[in-house]
Length: 461
Ligand code: URA
Image (cartoon, rainbow, N blue to C red; front, side, top):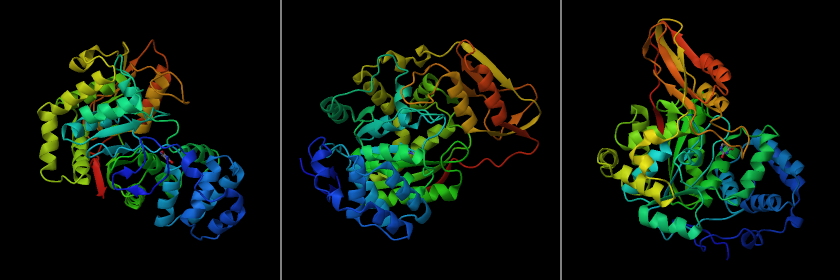
């Protein structure tokens, strides 16, 4: 199959295109003088699309060594990239592997969160979107370090599996409007290689590299509309609103460059989202939200993202009321049930989420003073879940789906000495002392009522 340019509905290829058939059309790396490219970026000049294609294609095929790309990455960190270059770099990375062609499906939409704690939004939002007539045919990741992954959460439901053939994936997306699988190992492989190199060369924290990394995978995943939830705060990659806005704007621009409709919402991640963190616990909270009985912040975020998705797909009229109706009327819950069953999960657990395996051990952390709860640091909660065994330090590690943390109070609420603030769900005290230590350090009580930031910090699109 031959590589062709992006169209509004994705790439005009067969179902999946193989990378070999595309990279053979790139300029010959033998003609590429990599030191010249490094020098060019070091002196602040912009690369052409052909130069970036050659560099990224050559690196993906193992023809350009790590040490040259490491020097180039550092030059990018110091000199930055123009919007055109960032878009071209993203397309080169997206084209380095499989490109999923979703053009046979109606109104395809994808969602990405830059990673938070207790963030079970995808479990609620994706069936809402399916109930609204959009199609979600999505690849999702597993959790790493303190952030959880949608696939891990769904695997708390006995029988549910993340592996589907391409044919079954597309059929399910067409019939139910929702199919969700693990990320293909050949999705934007250039990103995997570059990320590993960035990790060991202090070049992760660089806006055009972060934006191109995220968007290359989204563009290769094929959806026409993409909604981004850019988290800001202690538990997030972006610590300030200004940094979050910069990332969101860059990713929206990349989407335009690639012919996709991208909208972004900036959301607070100072405290975890909702009241529960940990895989089974988050599925329980997601199902409560699908029943219209979820915590206010999670409910609000899902509505906001659904409004953005409907707007991106070209259906802005009455978007808020229509999104709300999917939660109040049960249509999103029905989609979730059908989706779980289609991927081998036992729908009885959707009907009665109390059946899900939750670790039996309980420990509570009590307030040491009277006053107001100023903060529950999201990063501390994420690390506590990790210490309990609910997350993985390294790729491939097994996790305990049943452990987690429950927030009994939210920042801004009044506390009295001795009152339980957090409940820990543990298995035979594994990791419990470390989890309690992390949680204690993440709690802040003060005499003055704090200004709690709003959940929605901005919109870009
Ligand atoms: N997430 C990604 O996928 N890439 C980055 O560079 C940072 C966060």
